[in-house]
Length: 333
Image 1: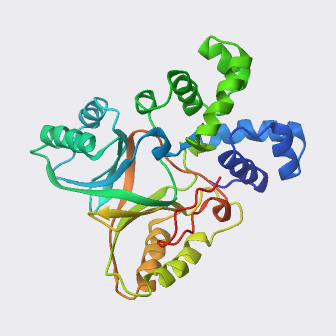
Image 2: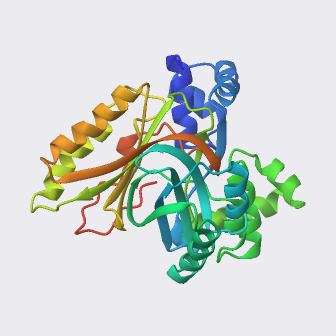
Protein backbone atom coordinates (compact mmCIF):
# COMPACT_ATOMS: atom_id res chain seq x y z
CA UNK A 1 0.00 0.00 0.00
CA UNK A 2 1.45 3.34 -1.08
CA UNK A 3 0.77 6.27 1.24
CA UNK A 4 1.58 9.90 0.52
CA UNK A 5 3.87 11.99 2.73
CA UNK A 6 1.08 13.72 4.66
CA UNK A 7 -0.69 10.44 5.41
CA UNK A 8 2.58 8.91 6.65
CA UNK A 9 3.16 11.91 8.89
CA UNK A 10 -0.37 11.67 10.31
CA UNK A 11 0.10 7.98 11.11
CA UNK A 12 3.45 8.68 12.79
CA UNK A 13 1.97 11.45 14.94
CA UNK A 14 -0.95 9.26 16.05
CA UNK A 15 1.28 6.28 16.82
CA UNK A 16 3.52 8.51 18.94
CA UNK A 17 0.60 10.19 20.72
CA UNK A 18 -2.93 9.06 19.97
CA UNK A 19 -4.35 11.88 22.09
CA UNK A 20 -2.59 14.66 20.22
CA UNK A 21 -5.00 17.56 19.49
CA UNK A 22 -5.79 18.10 15.81
CA UNK A 23 -4.41 21.66 15.87
CA UNK A 24 -1.05 20.49 17.21
CA UNK A 25 -0.92 17.59 14.76
CA UNK A 26 -1.60 19.98 11.89
CA UNK A 27 1.09 22.36 13.12
CA UNK A 28 3.64 19.55 13.46
CA UNK A 29 2.98 18.38 9.92
CA UNK A 30 2.58 21.82 8.39
CA UNK A 31 -0.94 21.49 7.02
CA UNK A 32 -4.33 23.05 7.69
CA UNK A 33 -6.64 21.79 10.41
CA UNK A 34 -9.20 20.69 7.81
CA UNK A 35 -6.54 18.72 5.93
CA UNK A 36 -5.45 17.06 9.15
CA UNK A 37 -9.03 16.04 9.98
CA UNK A 38 -9.60 14.54 6.53
CA UNK A 39 -6.28 12.67 6.58
CA UNK A 40 -6.98 11.26 10.04
CA UNK A 41 -10.26 9.85 8.74
CA UNK A 42 -8.50 8.52 5.65
CA UNK A 43 -5.71 6.67 7.51
CA UNK A 44 -8.13 5.35 10.13
CA UNK A 45 -9.93 3.55 7.33
CA UNK A 46 -7.04 2.70 4.99
CA UNK A 47 -4.70 1.09 7.58
CA UNK A 48 -7.32 0.26 10.19
CA UNK A 49 -5.95 2.40 12.99
CA UNK A 50 -6.92 1.20 16.44
CA UNK A 51 -6.21 3.69 19.22
CA UNK A 52 -4.98 2.06 22.39
CA UNK A 53 -2.35 2.28 25.13
CA UNK A 54 1.18 0.95 25.33
CA UNK A 55 1.27 -0.37 28.91
CA UNK A 56 4.07 -0.76 31.40
CA UNK A 57 3.43 -4.38 32.32
CA UNK A 58 5.29 -4.28 35.63
CA UNK A 59 3.29 -1.26 36.82
CA UNK A 60 0.16 -3.34 36.22
CA UNK A 61 1.57 -6.17 38.32
CA UNK A 62 2.26 -8.29 35.23
CA UNK A 63 5.84 -9.22 35.93
CA UNK A 64 6.09 -12.23 33.63
CA UNK A 65 5.69 -12.15 29.84
CA UNK A 66 6.40 -14.91 27.33
CA UNK A 67 6.88 -15.26 23.58
CA UNK A 68 5.97 -18.83 22.62
CA UNK A 69 6.73 -20.72 19.40
CA UNK A 70 4.50 -23.76 18.89
CA UNK A 71 5.05 -26.53 16.37
CA UNK A 72 1.88 -28.44 15.45
CA UNK A 73 1.24 -31.86 13.92
CA UNK A 74 -1.62 -30.56 11.81
CA UNK A 75 -3.60 -27.44 11.00
CA UNK A 76 -6.03 -26.76 13.82
CA UNK A 77 -9.40 -25.01 13.52
CA UNK A 78 -9.17 -21.36 14.43
CA UNK A 79 -12.34 -21.57 16.54
CA UNK A 80 -10.83 -24.35 18.65
CA UNK A 81 -7.72 -22.28 19.47
CA UNK A 82 -9.67 -19.10 20.14
CA UNK A 83 -12.07 -20.94 22.46
CA UNK A 84 -9.14 -22.23 24.51
CA UNK A 85 -7.41 -18.85 24.64
CA UNK A 86 -10.60 -17.05 25.65
CA UNK A 87 -10.84 -19.05 28.89
CA UNK A 88 -8.00 -17.10 30.50
CA UNK A 89 -6.76 -13.52 30.95
CA UNK A 90 -3.15 -14.66 30.41
CA UNK A 91 -2.88 -15.04 26.58
CA UNK A 92 -2.86 -11.73 24.70
CA UNK A 93 -2.01 -12.66 21.14
CA UNK A 94 -2.01 -15.65 18.82
CA UNK A 95 -1.21 -16.03 15.14
CA UNK A 96 -0.87 -18.89 12.71
CA UNK A 97 2.52 -19.00 11.00
CA UNK A 98 4.32 -20.79 8.18
CA UNK A 99 7.94 -21.72 8.67
CA UNK A 100 9.96 -23.31 11.45
CA UNK A 101 6.99 -23.05 13.81
CA UNK A 102 3.24 -22.97 13.22
CA UNK A 103 1.84 -20.67 15.88
CA UNK A 104 3.11 -17.65 17.80
CA UNK A 105 1.67 -16.82 21.22
CA UNK A 106 2.25 -13.96 23.64
CA UNK A 107 1.19 -14.34 27.27
CA UNK A 108 1.48 -12.25 30.44
CA UNK A 109 1.04 -13.26 34.07
CA UNK A 110 1.36 -11.91 37.59
CA UNK A 111 3.73 -14.72 38.53
CA UNK A 112 5.39 -17.74 37.00
CA UNK A 113 2.99 -20.19 38.65
CA UNK A 114 -0.04 -18.54 37.01
CA UNK A 115 1.70 -18.88 33.64
CA UNK A 116 2.61 -22.53 34.25
CA UNK A 117 -0.98 -23.37 35.22
CA UNK A 118 -2.33 -21.75 32.07
CA UNK A 119 0.31 -23.35 29.84
CA UNK A 120 -0.42 -26.76 31.37
CA UNK A 121 -4.16 -26.41 30.71
CA UNK A 122 -3.66 -25.15 27.14
CA UNK A 123 -1.05 -27.76 26.22
CA UNK A 124 -3.07 -30.56 27.82
CA UNK A 125 -6.09 -29.64 25.73
CA UNK A 126 -3.93 -29.91 22.58
CA UNK A 127 -1.64 -32.71 23.76
CA UNK A 128 -2.14 -34.80 20.61
CA UNK A 129 -1.45 -31.86 18.31
CA UNK A 130 1.56 -30.06 19.81
CA UNK A 131 5.00 -31.28 18.72
CA UNK A 132 7.01 -28.65 20.55
CA UNK A 133 6.43 -25.67 22.84
CA UNK A 134 9.27 -23.17 23.19
CA UNK A 135 8.56 -20.41 25.69
CA UNK A 136 10.93 -17.44 25.99
CA UNK A 137 10.64 -15.14 28.99
CA UNK A 138 10.74 -11.41 28.17
CA UNK A 139 13.60 -9.77 30.07
CA UNK A 140 14.40 -6.59 28.11
CA UNK A 141 11.96 -4.89 25.72
CA UNK A 142 13.77 -2.50 23.42
CA UNK A 143 10.92 -1.98 20.96
CA UNK A 144 7.35 -3.14 20.52
CA UNK A 145 4.31 -4.21 22.52
CA UNK A 146 1.13 -6.24 22.23
CA UNK A 147 -2.11 -4.50 23.25
CA UNK A 148 -3.65 -6.07 26.34
CA UNK A 149 -7.11 -7.58 26.39
CA UNK A 150 -9.68 -5.98 28.69
CA UNK A 151 -9.87 -8.96 31.06
CA UNK A 152 -6.19 -8.67 31.86
CA UNK A 153 -6.59 -5.03 32.86
CA UNK A 154 -9.68 -5.85 34.93
CA UNK A 155 -7.62 -8.39 36.89
CA UNK A 156 -4.69 -6.01 37.39
CA UNK A 157 -3.58 -4.57 40.74
CA UNK A 158 -4.95 -1.07 40.01
CA UNK A 159 -7.77 0.53 42.04
CA UNK A 160 -11.20 -0.23 40.55
CA UNK A 161 -11.85 3.32 39.29
CA UNK A 162 -8.52 3.30 37.47
CA UNK A 163 -9.22 -0.09 35.94
CA UNK A 164 -12.49 1.09 34.42
CA UNK A 165 -10.84 4.17 32.93
CA UNK A 166 -7.86 2.18 31.66
CA UNK A 167 -10.15 -0.35 29.97
CA UNK A 168 -11.88 2.47 28.08
CA UNK A 169 -8.56 4.00 27.04
CA UNK A 170 -7.34 0.57 25.99
CA UNK A 171 -10.39 0.27 23.73
CA UNK A 172 -9.98 3.77 22.31
CA UNK A 173 -7.27 6.03 23.70
CA UNK A 174 -8.34 8.96 21.51
CA UNK A 175 -11.72 9.37 23.25
CA UNK A 176 -12.40 12.84 24.61
CA UNK A 177 -12.94 13.38 28.33
CA UNK A 178 -16.60 14.03 27.54
CA UNK A 179 -16.93 10.71 25.69
CA UNK A 180 -15.14 8.88 28.50
CA UNK A 181 -17.42 10.46 31.10
CA UNK A 182 -20.48 9.36 29.15
CA UNK A 183 -19.25 5.79 28.82
CA UNK A 184 -18.34 5.60 32.51
CA UNK A 185 -21.57 7.28 33.63
CA UNK A 186 -19.81 10.08 35.49
CA UNK A 187 -18.67 13.69 35.12
CA UNK A 188 -15.89 15.21 33.01
CA UNK A 189 -14.26 16.55 36.17
CA UNK A 190 -14.19 13.05 37.67
CA UNK A 191 -12.60 11.64 34.52
CA UNK A 192 -9.96 14.38 34.36
CA UNK A 193 -9.04 13.84 38.00
CA UNK A 194 -8.64 10.08 37.72
CA UNK A 195 -6.98 10.39 34.30
CA UNK A 196 -4.21 12.46 35.89
CA UNK A 197 -3.91 10.02 38.79
CA UNK A 198 -3.69 7.14 36.31
CA UNK A 199 -0.86 8.85 34.46
CA UNK A 200 1.06 9.27 37.72
CA UNK A 201 1.04 5.50 38.28
CA UNK A 202 3.26 5.11 35.21
CA UNK A 203 1.22 2.19 33.90
CA UNK A 204 0.76 3.94 30.53
CA UNK A 205 3.95 4.35 28.54
CA UNK A 206 2.23 5.91 25.58
CA UNK A 207 -1.15 6.60 24.03
CA UNK A 208 -0.64 5.01 20.65
CA UNK A 209 -2.25 3.40 17.62
CA UNK A 210 -1.79 0.03 15.94
CA UNK A 211 -2.64 -0.80 12.33
CA UNK A 212 -5.13 -3.62 11.77
CA UNK A 213 -4.69 -3.37 7.98
CA UNK A 214 -0.88 -3.38 7.79
CA UNK A 215 0.56 -1.45 4.85
CA UNK A 216 3.19 -4.16 4.24
CA UNK A 217 2.06 -7.75 3.52
CA UNK A 218 5.01 -9.77 4.89
CA UNK A 219 5.49 -10.21 8.64
CA UNK A 220 8.56 -12.24 9.51
CA UNK A 221 9.02 -13.24 13.14
CA UNK A 222 12.13 -14.93 14.43
CA UNK A 223 13.71 -16.15 17.64
CA UNK A 224 17.43 -15.58 18.18
CA UNK A 225 19.99 -17.95 19.67
CA UNK A 226 23.43 -16.49 20.35
CA UNK A 227 26.79 -18.02 21.09
CA UNK A 228 27.79 -15.07 23.24
CA UNK A 229 31.18 -13.51 22.62
CA UNK A 230 33.04 -10.82 24.56
CA UNK A 231 32.18 -8.23 21.90
CA UNK A 232 28.45 -9.08 21.83
CA UNK A 233 27.25 -5.64 22.98
CA UNK A 234 29.54 -3.89 20.49
CA UNK A 235 28.14 -6.01 17.64
CA UNK A 236 24.62 -5.41 18.95
CA UNK A 237 25.18 -1.68 18.53
CA UNK A 238 25.99 -2.30 14.87
CA UNK A 239 22.84 -4.41 14.65
CA UNK A 240 20.94 -1.44 16.08
CA UNK A 241 22.07 0.63 13.07
CA UNK A 242 20.45 -1.94 10.76
CA UNK A 243 17.29 -1.88 12.84
CA UNK A 244 16.98 1.90 12.68
CA UNK A 245 17.82 2.23 8.98
CA UNK A 246 14.58 2.91 7.12
CA UNK A 247 12.85 5.50 4.97
CA UNK A 248 11.68 8.79 6.47
CA UNK A 249 8.34 8.39 8.27
CA UNK A 250 8.14 4.82 7.01
CA UNK A 251 4.78 3.07 7.46
CA UNK A 252 5.07 0.73 9.16
CA UNK A 253 8.51 0.47 10.75
CA UNK A 254 10.68 -2.35 9.43
CA UNK A 255 11.19 -3.63 12.98
CA UNK A 256 8.04 -3.94 15.08
CA UNK A 257 9.58 -5.91 17.95
CA UNK A 258 13.13 -6.11 19.27
CA UNK A 259 13.26 -7.85 22.65
CA UNK A 260 15.77 -9.84 24.64
CA UNK A 261 14.58 -13.03 26.26
CA UNK A 262 15.69 -15.96 28.37
CA UNK A 263 14.64 -19.59 28.39
CA UNK A 264 14.09 -21.20 25.00
CA UNK A 265 15.72 -18.31 23.10
CA UNK A 266 17.88 -15.23 23.60
CA UNK A 267 15.76 -12.78 21.62
CA UNK A 268 12.69 -12.19 19.51
CA UNK A 269 12.25 -9.87 16.52
CA UNK A 270 9.31 -9.04 14.28
CA UNK A 271 9.97 -7.37 10.93
CA UNK A 272 7.76 -6.19 8.06
CA UNK A 273 8.53 -6.14 4.35
CA UNK A 274 6.98 -5.74 0.92
CA UNK A 275 8.06 -9.22 -0.17
CA UNK A 276 9.67 -12.40 1.12
CA UNK A 277 13.02 -11.65 -0.51
CA UNK A 278 13.34 -8.35 1.32
CA UNK A 279 12.22 -9.88 4.61
CA UNK A 280 14.82 -12.64 4.56
CA UNK A 281 17.52 -10.30 3.22
CA UNK A 282 17.20 -8.29 6.43
CA UNK A 283 17.37 -11.43 8.55
CA UNK A 284 20.45 -12.73 6.73
CA UNK A 285 22.16 -9.33 7.11
CA UNK A 286 21.78 -9.62 10.89
CA UNK A 287 23.10 -13.19 10.85
CA UNK A 288 26.18 -12.13 8.87
CA UNK A 289 26.84 -9.32 11.31
CA UNK A 290 27.38 -11.82 14.15
CA UNK A 291 29.85 -13.91 12.09
CA UNK A 292 28.21 -17.26 12.72
CA UNK A 293 27.43 -16.65 16.40
CA UNK A 294 23.72 -16.06 15.72
CA UNK A 295 21.25 -18.79 14.83
CA UNK A 296 17.58 -18.04 14.14
CA UNK A 297 14.26 -19.85 13.86
CA UNK A 298 11.78 -17.94 11.74
CA UNK A 299 8.26 -18.03 10.37
CA UNK A 300 5.92 -15.77 8.45
CA UNK A 301 2.64 -14.81 10.09
CA UNK A 302 -0.28 -15.92 7.96
CA UNK A 303 -3.21 -14.89 10.17
CA UNK A 304 -3.77 -13.19 13.52
CA UNK A 305 -6.46 -15.19 15.30
CA UNK A 306 -6.45 -13.65 18.78
CA UNK A 307 -5.65 -10.12 19.91
CA UNK A 308 -4.59 -7.21 17.74
CA UNK A 309 -1.87 -6.68 15.15
CA UNK A 310 0.90 -4.72 16.96
CA UNK A 311 1.97 -2.86 13.81
CA UNK A 312 3.02 0.79 14.20
CA UNK A 313 5.09 3.60 12.73
CA UNK A 314 7.07 5.23 15.54
CA UNK A 315 10.11 7.47 15.85
CA UNK A 316 12.79 4.89 16.63
CA UNK A 317 15.19 7.49 18.00
CA UNK A 318 12.59 8.46 20.60
CA UNK A 319 11.14 5.02 21.39
CA UNK A 320 13.95 2.46 21.03
CA UNK A 321 15.56 1.57 24.37
CA UNK A 322 19.34 1.66 23.92
CA UNK A 323 20.20 0.75 27.52
CA UNK A 324 23.19 -1.46 28.16
CA UNK A 325 22.86 -4.76 30.02
CA UNK A 326 25.02 -3.20 32.71
CA UNK A 327 22.51 -0.39 33.25
CA UNK A 328 18.92 -0.18 34.40
CA UNK A 329 16.58 -0.18 31.35
CA UNK A 330 15.51 3.33 30.40
CA UNK A 331 11.76 3.90 30.15
CA UNK A 332 11.37 6.29 27.24
CA UNK A 333 8.21 8.33 26.98
